[in-house]
Length: 211
Image 1 (cartoon, rainbow, N blue to C red):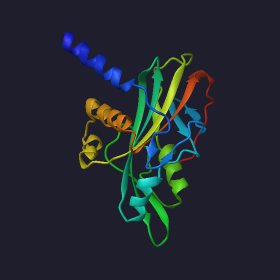
Image 2: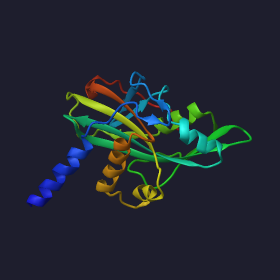
Image 3: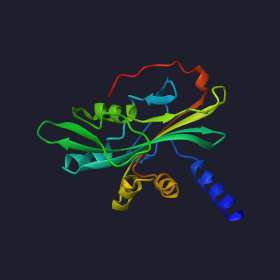
Image 4: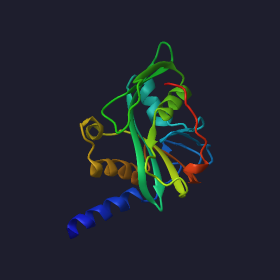
């Protein structure tokens, strides 16, 4: 029993570890002042951040070289530095050299899912918006009057073994935490945006367009 408690505390400590806002893709950093709007439709919490860019730097160059790039995104709600709810998606982005447009496909088996799985003929900004707006988390059971912090993370899969985290029928929590914390420590291929404190009771219910 003691070992089990220690393990749970270790995992909670990793998930609550500080994440640097504005980690870099190559030479470009995301400004911590980028606006993140929060939407609540029933128990489903989504965000929009048109100024949040992650198809930049080295990932963008890889795309223009004809290589598809996989991005793992996570939306986390934290209370007292502990993650109380999360939503995770994985996207594969490709670039059409002739049309100079981007395509996005949701891949793997994620913790959350919506109906549409792909989109094409987009600018880089439109592709980024589509990825973010197809990420959500479930707030069921959470106190509407408690103060929370919201964290949006998008990270590039740099290694082939990273794909196994999301392709497995069941996502292993320890491996998932390791993926995000490893990327945060290296300060590479990561973009992070935070907002808070917020209260669910203050969020206006909004119906988002189907995507």
